[in-house]
Length: 559
Image 1 (spheres, rainbow, N blue to C red):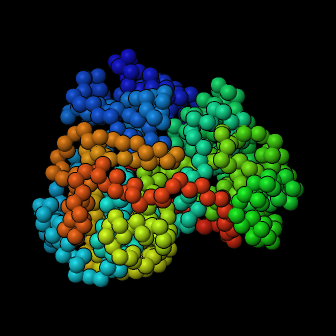
Image 2: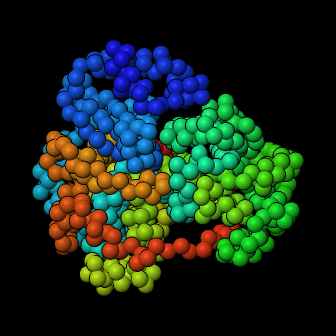
């Protein structure tokens, strides 16, 4: 028994040590898995290789699917996890695949409850309701569990077929634009071992992204990399390995003070920040006008602590600034980016940012234009080149006016048709669940696509069954902007994959046939900027901190 469990879970280079958030020792880990799968030792019937959907690293995993026993997860050497790493979060995260309540057919709400209908009936209802209203009376939401190809079809349906930019994701709704372009400045995960100092902002990394936490621990263990921790609580595993610690009740104010110190003490990289970066003068003027006492009060620290941190910062050589989006506000993320710009730690080997996105395809939301103001590749929808490409590729004369991602404006609207694909905002709302329920209930016709009747799906008029990426085929883009393909490997009990459902809806609305995810990806590439654009980094001043995340799990229906 122990040998078999070792093959599945210990030989995959997991860090089982006192600093691991999931178990204190190997015995605990073995007992955990034995509790989950007491019959795991019996041989499995099907091996499926896929990309883990539990965080944004994009680790390659293989799960051994048995019709009786359920999935057993094993790490395999992949593009990202070249050592075959797999974490306990992945093992727990794949348990929902065997949900006995999984939907396999469209469900229509009636006075007597939900009843099964055919896909043709479901698509006809969607077509009729869309054609009965004005374009701007339709609203689309798409989540980060959808493949890039599915997200592209959602964008194309909304903009080209329906004619609306009411296109959002609850994942990023109301959180500003500080997250949108973090990954453009990311250094590769593999370069963590080549840094001299790792700066960890916040407390959630070990849980938010066990793979990156594994790499940080490995770098400290093997390369003696120094770890500096800027914490809001001083709680959690990071404290067991951090060499230097700073308490900051407000990371936003702490960073504002540190950046101000860099400028006022003339220790910033002036050539990079003032000559290469844009809008430094405006940022500098506004920052220096802010109240030092207010920021000190909000962060709960002293000027001596800020001075000590900056002393470490300017003398640390190659550094990695690592932070998890799920824990930080958009403006806090921007201030970390500003710190990298002020110190010149951007665009260099093993010297820069590592922004950890929350879900498997959070980056795909940005790349595939799931935003009311940005299209393919994060390009402004009013960009002339993008407009010309949509005219050629989609055959549309012009795109609709920009929509909004302001949460108050969105939730106070009353859409006639509401489409929520791959998200459960009610089930994952950290607060104001009633407000989310009220918004969805206001729609005359609402459609949800998910694996089961989530709290959000229960309020919908029509529920479509979802499929996993290994059931439909497609790609995910991780936090490093690495695109990885997963082939369709199994025929699920769902007659039409999620991609096929979207393709069928697109055809009913007058768009051309899309036969496969590969075809969708090839078409989507035609809308990306014509050349890899390395625009100058820009300082973007903010007068105050903005909202933290509103939904857990990236608003997905599973963790």
